[in-house]
Image (cartoon, rainbow, N blue to C red; front, side, top):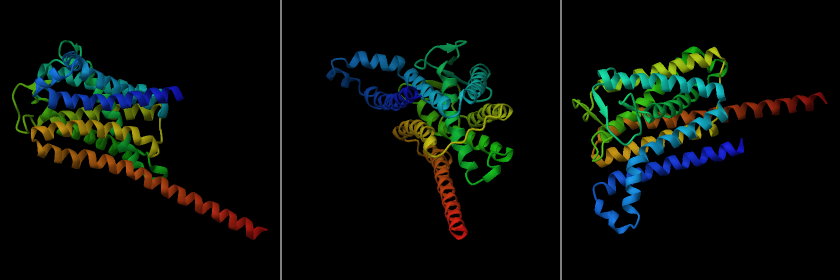
Length: 306
């Protein structure tokens, strides 16, 4: 298990570093290619990063979250969530790129790896998986905090599905406007929409896709009686993954001058994610106080009895 943790951390650090290098390439090198002349291996490294940088950071993020889920949630929880996330998101993306439903009319360009059916890069459903799981775990644990015996009842669980889907969609508030209009875009809209180039339908598609696959995963967890309980320390990786990916999108949107999507993303995504994480700390403190009080009461009772 210690070896798995080391690999997980390596993948997480690599995931974050790859995004930093990606930002440097997209915002610094692409607009100023002359910079490469001052680096002996600059042109070669730049070609490699442009050819596989997007694939690399998504694969590293997927591996980090998958290893984390195996270690903390168990193999059953990991497999059921992954099947639901990859299956539903790939179906939605294939429909979207071929029919325009549910996201709108768009097409993927190069830079994100082999395209399934010539339409959707294989890395796209993987990103739905790892961001979806991070979002759901934060939402589920945050809403369960302080719930006592009914902390994981159906009402709270369904609310977690919806909140997790909102966190996931909020990431796209910030990501999509910049990534589809950067100097080196990875996808484009056939008909630019009213929201900074995106159709409003895209957000409904994101929210709906998230609700469906997270809901299916929750149903499978309930069916097989998977009910992992995570403390604040165990939720650190989901928070780091979420905020790192959000930060990547935020910097891209800042560079493009898209401030409204940033504000919306922070209010509906980054801030709720942090609050969910903090809620688990408050629950841990309450639990520790209750346990301490019980120990004191037992000690007092024992003293009186003697």
